[in-house]
Length: 180
Image 1 (tube, rainbow, N blue to C red):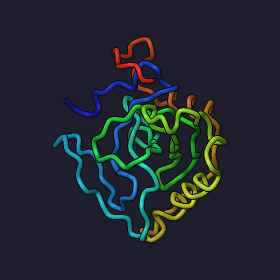
Image 2: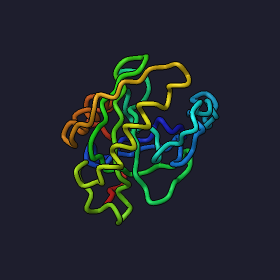
Image 3: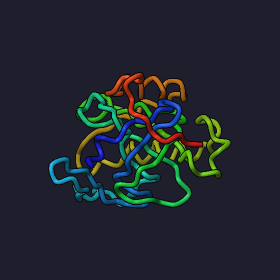
């Protein structure tokens, strides 16, 4: 079964299914190869940086850059490439890169009780948001590629971005397990 056949989830946009490409703490950038149905090493970050949280894509979406919508998920422990996580969005980091708009949804793992009281960006320590902005502001610098961080937007905006890039209309979404 291809990862790209996994539905977004029937509770979308409040809870979305996401696939991890890059685990927290990694400087390796993995990408899913559709033809081979495997995750492969795309490159290693040129800077001595690491992804601050698990990073991947939201299932059943296609953003303006031609890839599924990006998502960063806060988990207690890093997971692994290919891990399916039910994620609860908190907000969205609005960005631009060499290809144009490049939104990053920020979420928490819905199944982790440590985050059950986290519902919006302001529920997080402000330093976490600053670290994420800093990472995305400089992570491509030594590749001589530019990223422009435009700032954080709230959970309602994140839900709107998810719905905008959703491929399967809500009424056609296959049944998916409900999450707490």
